[in-house]
Image (tube, rainbow, N blue to C red):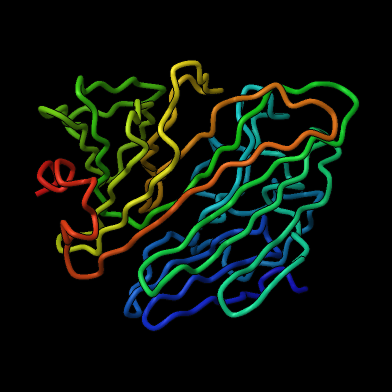
Length: 296
């Protein structure tokens, strides 16, 4: 498969573009022809040497890896990455398509020579407004590895992101979020409407995240399993938001609980997505009424 060969899953007006050749990415979400995910204009279609990716152009030299775009599976914690970059075999390598039909695509990476992990990703269309992403890690090494699955989705800006909680709080990881993070009565709203680099960590007690693109939508909900009392996270929090100061994108980042992954053991994490192209409908987002109110 060519590096830039796209496979599209389509149901009515919903299209999911997948890029197996570069990290098995969900490259874009399109609804009624509108693109929702960021694709780096400096890298689209560029041929690259897998062993010399530092030569690729970037407007964010502070990050020593290519910012391709789309949504992908990273490995947490990032403190165990080599040279501050996601494992290249998993982030930029070719994923083999292992199963495919009109409504799903399943891919698997090579075994990373550094982490000794492999990643499997299955993307499944559920309806014309919903889909599911299943991430799976396998430890091919001989030692136990504490790790977590980290789904990173690069969203076109401007976007607003809301997470509900009884005692709203956010935790700065780096940068300045001044003026862009609002703690409301029962939620936190992050306004990624301008280039201002920051990253924050957030609780996600009910497992729901609501994203609004632009002034009028569409709206996107992501649901993951709600954290349990004994869950621990590789980055301390189950959800993070990054906003770029160099490109017009922000990131919604979901974490699975961290686990001591034994040799040959697997870790699985599932996300369910639902989209409303023309405004949130409470009957569709029935468990997000307070979030809708916060975002209005």
